[in-house]
Image (cartoon, rainbow, N blue to C red; front, side, top):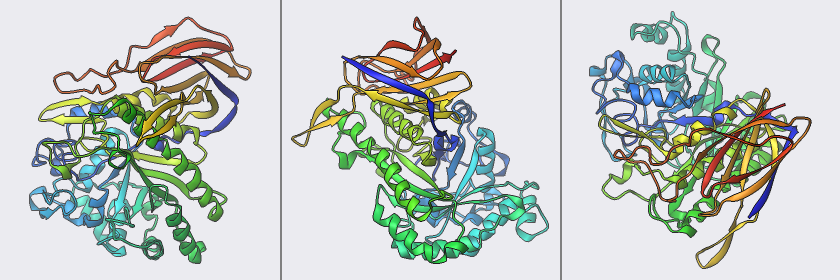
Length: 502
C-alpha cells in the first residue's frame, strides 16, 4: 500500500503557540490529592508537599501552562478557603465530583509553587457560577498587586512577598452547564460584568478567557458574540475557550480497554471532529473579530470513556491505551495544521483523570501512551508550522451497520532553523504504509531520524507491573536523503521524522 506526503517548506502557516500543548488539573478524583500531592494532601499547605516524581516526568514534556482549579469545581470554589495555614482552612463538600470532602490543603500558593516547579504559566479559572465579580477581582489583586494593600499584604504574610504575576484568567467554566446553566445571552451579560473589574494589577497584563461552547456548537458562539457586541468597545476579552471531548459513550466505541477493530476506527473518526471545531468556530469568530484579537482556545479536550469497573464513577479514572495515544496525536496534529487559528489548548487531565499523561498508585507512577505522544511532539512547540499534504487510501470500517471511512495517513509538519519535524499517524491495524515524502522548496534532506510509538496489540497499555509496555522506540537514523525519499510507517502508529535540512 502506497501513499505520498508533500511538505511545502515555502508555505508557512504560523508559529505553533506552545500553549496548545497546555495541561489541566482539577480537584477531581485523585488528580490533586494522590496525584500532584501525596496521599490525602495532609502534607501539603504552605510548607510544600508536591510529588517530585510527578513533577520531574511532567517537566520533560515542557508544559507551557496549567489550568486550575477546574472544570466544574471552579464554579463552586471560593479561593479564600485555600489560603493561610493549612490546618485552619475550612473543609468543604466537592458537590460535583463524588461529594468528597475537600480539605483545601492545595490552594493558590500551592498551585503557583506547582507551576513554578513545572516551568508552566498558571491559568486560573474563576468562579462565575456561584461567585461574584468582587471575589474574582480580589483574587487577581491577591495574586498580582506588589504590596501595600490588604490583599497583597496578606499574600506576603502567607509567605509570598513578591506578586505571582498570573496572566491567564478564565471567566467561568462551562457556563452553559455546571457553571450556571446560562443561556449565551445571560453569560455574555455576566462576562461583561465580571470583566469590568478584572484589571492589570501590578503591571501583569491579563488575558481574559471567556467560556466557549460545548463541542462545535455554532449557535452558542453566534449568540454569545452577538450579545457581547452591544458593549464591544468596553468589554475586555482576549480568549474564547471551547470544550471538545472524544466521548466514547456517545461514539459507541467500546470501553477504555475493550474494543473491536471497528470501534478503534470509530473513536479516531470522532477525534477528527476537533478539526471541524477549530475551522468553523474560528470562521464564525472572524465575523465578529476579523483582526483576530480574540484567540480561539480549546481548554478542555480528550478521550472520555465509560466508567471503569471497581473505581468510583465520579472520579473519572480510566486506563490509557495505544488508541488514546492516536487520539492525542491526531488532535495535536490538527492544532499544528491550524496554527493560524488556535492559540491554546489543555488536555483533560494531567494525572489520574480522563486522558491522563500520568497514573499514580500509592508511591508508584507510570507514564501513559498519551504522555509519550507529548514527548514525541515536543519539537513542534514554538516551531513554524508549514503545510503538508497527505494522500493515502482511506480506511473502510463499519459502525452501527453503516460503512464509514477514515483517513489513511494524517499528520503535521514544522520547521525550526534547519530542522524539519514531521509527525505522522497511520491508523491502519496490522497494515504498514509506504509513503513517498517530497520536500517542496529549496531544501533537501541531509539526515533523517525516526522515532515511533506503536505496539502489536491495539489495546496495549501500561500498568504498574508493566509500565513500559507502550513506549517510544529509540531514535533510529534512516539511510535516506534528497528532495524525495520513501519511508514505511508501521501499522497503528505515531511516527516522528526529524529531518536535517541542507
